[in-house]
Amino acid sequence: MKLKEIAGFLDSAVPLSLQEDYDNSGLQCGMPEMEVSSALLTLDVTEEVVKEAACTGCNMIISHHPVIFRPLKRLSDSSPAEKIITRAIRQDIAIYSAHTNLDKIENGVSRKMAEKLGLSDIRVLSPLKDRLLKLVVFIPDDHLDRVTQAVYEAGAGVIGKYDSCGFTVSGTGSFRAGEDADPFVGEKGRIHFEKESRFETILFAHLRSRVIKALLEAHPYEEVAYDIYPLENQNTAAGLGCTGDLNDIMEEREFLKKVSAVFDVELIRHSVLTGRKIKKVALCGGSGGSLAGAAAACGADAFLTADIKYHTFLDSGNSLLLADIGHYESEIFSIEILHELIIKKFPKFALRFSEINTNPINYLQYGKSQNA
Image 1 (cartoon, helix red, strand yellow):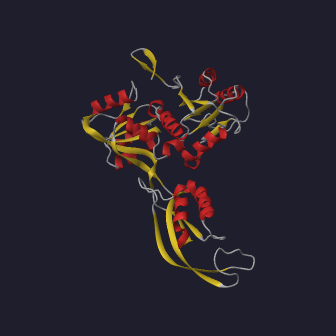
Image 2 (tube, rainbow, N blue to C red):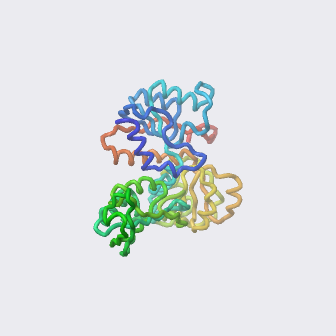
Image 3 (cartoon, helix red, strand yellow):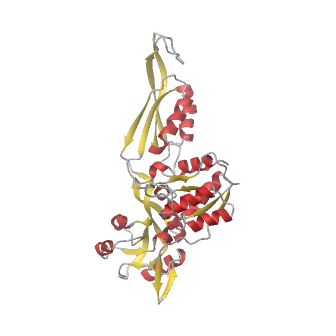
């Protein structure tokens, strides 16, 4: 398939509009019209990963962390990012990254962590705000089903675990067609009254263009009357971090041992052990220390994340167990999410997981240097 097909799918499935302002998710390098036969999935793109892709016949690399995170002023060998991009271009290998947008989608990085731990009743820890819109449109009664179905198929009407959510009320619409109009009903120059339905539904902001396009294509009127309102509601299905419950209450040490086994972590930085029981767990893949307050506020007994700062440990006191399991370790399962999304859409597309450990952090334990 062409690169633009799979890149376009990922742009939609993991919306670029969800990424943080500082981020640079999306296509890093590659020509949209190039043919891609297989892709290598990796957390980070390094020179070794580019070499692995070339050796295994993969002409595309899909990663969680972007290669181009800061603006590049040149393409030479003066920085790691420049070396990676130039080598990929020479090998005719495309690179695509899904970073903070992959963190925020409904089945994102933190939820995958929760699933690996076997948590139940999984919910978003910090839901997205200012990302919901309400669509209101007036539809002639005999076209109501057609138009609403088109809008739903475009992605509108999703609230949590429910889809096709909307509200309809009947009424009478009026209009007068001008001399240059081509009215679907009524006559030019005369006021016409038509039995119509006011239909309203909800949509995510990143779907606005797609939903409106579907609406206009399905609606019979030459000029479609519709309104879009921004909503202050939280999007409880998407956001940063998540919470969930362990099936059984655990002692702190028992819980940390389980975490170590699940995420293959040999060194966990954690707050003081107080003998608390662990039942409700909050998690955030990557650098989630800023959500420690939210984790405590929601009643979590423990919070798993990475890159926790000294003062975050200090300020948390004994409110909950903080556990820093490492950035790489907390996000390593992100490539499984990408695999699941792509295979569901393109079941015959060849994917393989990178065999290279790209973790740049090493730990010294008992006099031995060991990559975690």
